[in-house]
Length: 497
Image 1 (cartoon, one colour):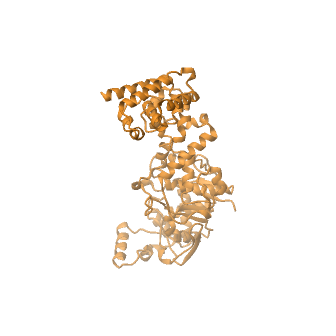
Image 2 (cartoon, helix red, strand yellow):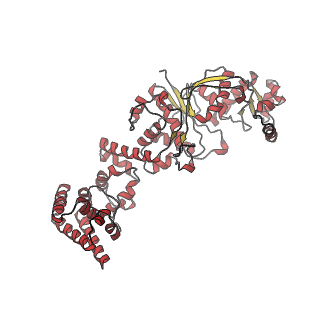
Image 3 (cartoon, one colour):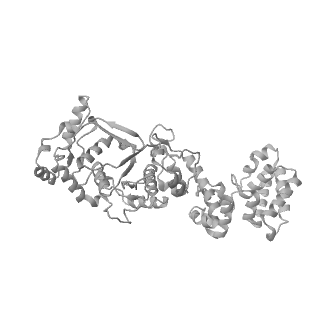
């Protein structure tokens, strides 16, 4: 495969969403596979929608995902500038090329008249095409067109409608008739280019030979082909990416469907490895049953030809599952010490008073239950502060209710458990010794593990679930464990009274 030079060209108009990121992942992988180039270009010509700080957020998100760029902001390159607002003179020079070729004109028509043309065509029930209302100024000489342009008139392309056909690397062989080609605006009244014009120029000057973008741009492709032809330049490979669909599968994913920005997912404890993995597989697979892919595996196995040509449903449950898989994978591969820094900022407030070594012990026994890092806040709070005692949580436990245990029975079981656990001193309070005592308690009380261990687990945590009981008690320590068992026993006595 020849060297792929491609780009990610977002607009800094707000948060960077799931669809944006997938449009960066696929071209990035294609470029890296061929030792090509991945360019970041900021398409900031829509100044009315520009959002302060959005560019920085885009770059931060790409770096978080490990999608480093070879040319672009903060990196530089031989084909800059990489902000379209800084390339204004370039676009105007290229617009002049079309003017002198007789393929562009300055259009002084006011918006009200343009709307009138649209309304007239709608009333006649015919497709609205501006070229059918092309003004007389379209026939001015190049000097006359430039003079009118300098007075503030936008520049339009003079279409040459005809049947066009092309190949899309995802959608296959496509064609369109002359009825979809029009006199599109190239340079707006403010002197800045439209996307339709600027990306053609930029891609050519930056040597881009593969363009990946959303399938929503397909209807505009005939106009792009007309521009390539007018400039007599070779078009790049075109890769149309199907929509990411809402969970219902019947529409494009949007905010109303619960879609969140990548930043929100990051703040919610999603790992970059999981996000990269999930989005890469959202509309692509290598033909196997594999679901967990590292970045290196994606680089090895990805191919444009395996991108599906229909939309893929966004499934947040699947993303959370995959994130949990990645947490376990990374802890297993790296160890707790290396993984621990990723958890900073996700612990409960009560953990602030504790040393990192203690938090690492907690992480070591809880990580395999996490779906996101933010789960740490709720799932570990009882390791750092005494939980609120809720007798009903004991009394309503399904295993204890099924066993038909009364409050006095439960209080007696806690007393027996306390008595046996007190035989261990601080030096012998280890996982192995705790397991021995707990198993002997089963024999002594004649209770099933689900009954006795549920009672002790709830009494020390008052949490919906916790790690293996011997591990939990070991980390909590002797003093805390015994104190909480006593408190739980007292609450049952009081509740019984």
